[in-house]
Image 1: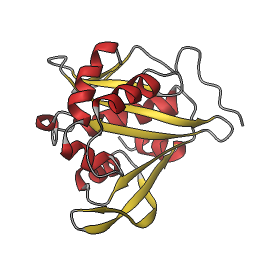
Image 2 (image 1 turned 90 degrees about the vertical axis):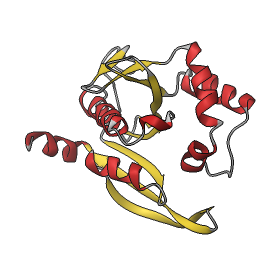
Image 3 (image 1 turned 60 degrees about the vertical axis):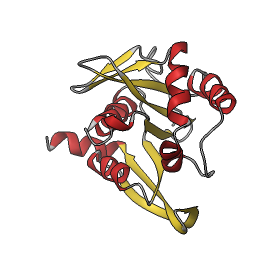
Image 4 (image 1 turned 90 degrees about the horizontal axis):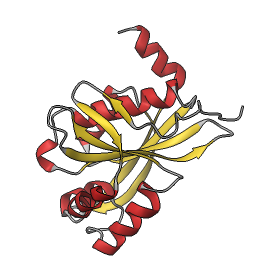
Length: 193
């Protein structure tokens, strides 16, 4: 089966939630990306390399991927204040197999632990299964990021494997955890609500 998204569904202008609104990125969001991905703790949680990205690397990433045609990247805004706090995206869309990879970063540290990442993940997964006709959404997360793992589990992601000792951080090796959710699993969760 070949993936055929609903016309206009691939790049929606906005996806509203209760706590947040996902919006298409704009050029001025680069300033926030430079701040986020220069933060050593954000880099520790999101990168294989030890240390933050340089401003030039961040700019190339932003314009090449976030604003590029091959990523469905959305800015995460707090609904009440419209404050930009993070980014989430689908990449590596495989039309033949109906699958995609999911990525998320809450870049503003004071926004961690408030449920914004969980809601953003849920909104993107719902968009994937209801508007894009995707069958499988997958992601990878480092074992030392329990907050993210918990958010993914709350959204229905299931651990499907590990790359053992894949990353060296904080003086030791950690696993990279591979998780996914399938369309029928997501649908079953919706009927239970």
